[in-house]
Amino acid sequence: MIYALKEQFNFFWLARAERERRMLLICALVITLALVYAIFLAPALSGLKQLQTSIPVLNQQLAEMAELSKQQSQLAASLSETISPVSKEQLEQSLTRRGIKPQTIGVNDDIVRVQIPAAGYANLMEWLVEVQKASRLTVEEAKLVSLLESGQVSATLTLRQQRSSQ
Image (cartoon, rainbow, N blue to C red; front, side):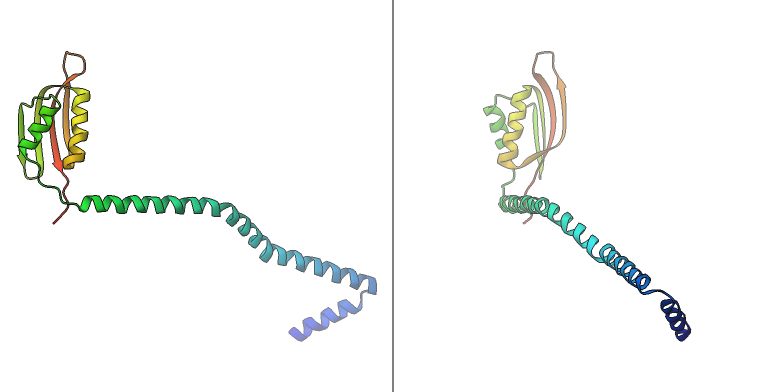
């Protein structure tokens, strides 16, 4: 079969004039070069161009990830510090410093419940930030009711102390 194809090609080739053979060789060469370019070079060149545009973005993302990793390690170090359990007396003192008079304060393990009949909203928020930093208390549940006096609220708060596991 291969021998028959070879014979047919030889017969076809010898039937052509010298000028025609040259034109067929040039066409075959051009088609071969176009295929090599389309299959091998074009994808490589477009990939190179895409890589050159994405490298600066990837470097920026790498820098951001390194910064986040640094912040995470600093946060982990600060969380590993032991915090003493919050007490009712500590909470009463911090509320008194802010001029807030609580109705009730309940401390049970890491859960703190505070009822405040009347306090300035801004003052209450500042106190929450203070106890969050000092005792790692986070708000689990908050019920705030606006009072008739401008800027005054009644609050029922449930806070949880975030402590490192021992």
